[in-house]
Length: 85
Image: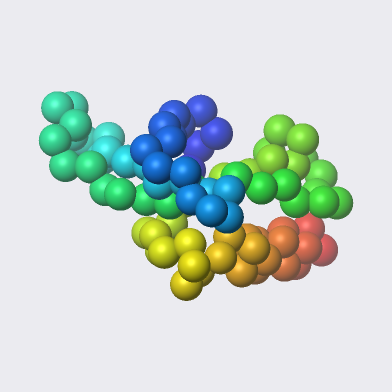
């Protein structure tokens, strides 16, 4: 998700993530939103990534108890380590 995309908090969740709505760029009337969950986090030791290593993960896995934020963000750290090598 581009860093300049506004993802308003529709409902905050217990793990620090939140529910938001995303609209297709081809839907000028914004009629059909897709409910998503947004996780904001920082990756340590990344160079040239997001502003100050800050990232957002957008997913349709909405249940924060079944899919904790740390569990979803962990593979992203591994991915960046592999890509940076």
